[in-house]
Image (cartoon, rainbow, N blue to C red):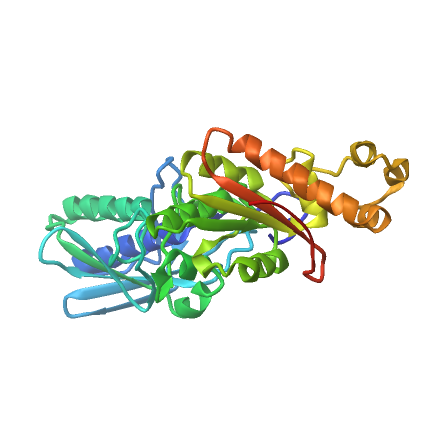
Length: 349
């Protein structure tokens, strides 16, 4: 996760909110013969943001508008992307299509059916509401085809979870509130949950959650797991394990570096440096090594204690995982690595 800047953070708008604004502005031209310079929409919780138009075009029987996504201070890969909505009459009802840079769902487990454009339920509902409202305003039939596209979306999607989730050909149009809250833990955890849903729907028996790219690479190679079995856990061990406890698979491997795995071994479920710390007194007591009290980091403690500490961390982390999963039949194991990717210790299945 990117480092959080100091001070108050500016919020932004989701791709779903941008798409909804683009649909409204495009309908204003299609049914009212003029593009506005800006457009206001109402979000699910009542906020009413205003979006300037970044692109507009029209032809016989169609109109399109592009809105540039502003993600505020969040390190969102789609910040600055152009979200384009083209509207035209449909054969009946509101029909959604994926244009260039918007993906399609190819695996079960997501809230959108296989074969459908990767446009999530809340953005769909927002756009459907706008179509209904605008149809009443202009006295038109609410039978509209909406084609969403994002220039460059295919490349941007490679930086997201989409390929692992079975979304091919581009980005997802996302959002539950319409608002991007900078450095949102909830957004990351929601992505972990969707990864579990897809893994379960695909019948995977073994999944893994790792604290970073190096541990993920090591664990994936260790067990020969497919990409969509690798859950992007990061610091959110609790978010992953608590969801698995209610939506189980046969086996979970948790892997990570000595620092974050030490915190997990000591009972932390949020492993971020700003939200949990290694208890060096407890570490010293558990290993019978008083000198560890003066260690500055878990890595420096490991350099003093050696393999005994690594194995203790693997064992105690496993015990904490099993405690969270105690009412399930899920098998679990842990893998502790160093910064170079060498396996220091393993425990469990």
